[in-house]
Length: 368
Length: 97
Ligand code: SF4
Ligand code: SF4
Image (tube, rainbow over all chains, first blue to last red; front, side):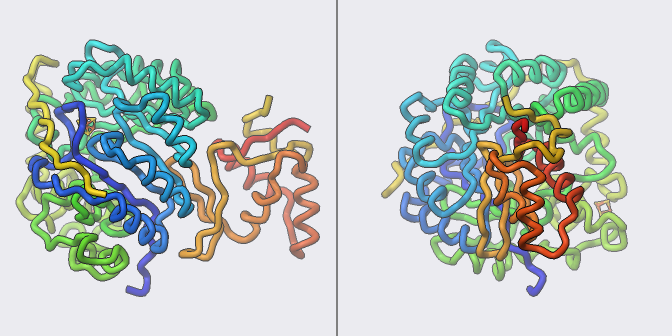
């Protein structure tokens, strides 16, 4: 492909092990299938290939990346290659000693998730006492001179507290706060009825986010990820299939986005292929690249280069066909699937639904 | 105290890269890039040259003068606007004159 650009970002999902059990976790349902994790040297080879391919932003995620005992080595390799390294963490396991080692290894930026603005709700959503440790870790991140992002996943159980969540981010002197409405894949789709907010909740939250973004401009970036079920148009998922980003799962599977493991497509794995082959030639990455695969109404739509027909995973999970228009789009013939879910959410009591926590996966020890 | 106000990219300000951003050359794209949390800015030759001169001691006026030695046409207001955008994104900080 002559017009294929190099990827900008790699999401490295180092392990799906995590001490928390958030019911909206985007990890796969079949967590135990990812026990055979890449070794340190395999990750180091992947990072070298990624940098050669043009990757500049490395996101170290999971699960909980601090569960990998070799995280410091992986960071040191990535920093040495010239990647900008971001740690996306629940902060459990970020001891002062570990933090200093990561700082010395060249880690550039830390993103800490909190589940709400206060301990009792945050710990209930995480199904683990963790809030106070998260705050201590956030202060440590600032003391060591890192830029700090606070990540909060929003849903009907915490969306009304968005103003207090922004206050918390300000108190922690965060440089960025990412307020991301839940995306319904994996465990979140399983828990959708209990997580999906009402339209009124969404409208109130959006007004608060807009006000905060203006008020804090130049001091703290307020990033608000829209709840796509409540929008007219879908999101341009990952900036387009195989266009800017790639993901490597704990077992070495390479994916155009972290939820694409659910799609019935041929696999591509770094144990069998180079990252360059996967990006440039694999059937998986070619499948929904560009606009040639599109059905109506996307095919003739003026927005096809803006949102790329939306999310392939969402199309598959809701309709059973990954090549359909994202049902979130109001032009999609399947849009009633989404409006029905939003309508039901509006009728339900504000809280009190039972959430299915994601379990702790069984795990082999990572090989060297 | 460094000022982070977007208006301080006038001639006497002394810009420098913020501590958490990195200017580097990307062989895959054959371009300089500016890396910050969640952002990559791919730079053209002049942009890279401007940022390479932002060391916190040169003033904007001095940076423009340096560039004029290297390039035939350098529009001072374009340099100020470029730096102003990066100040707004908190990639560049400006110390007072
Ligand atoms: S969403 Fe929660 S459970 Fe899933 S990886 Fe993140 S912190 Fe762990
Ligand atoms: S029809 Fe397709 S391309 Fe047009 S807005 Fe909807 S999803 Fe996007």
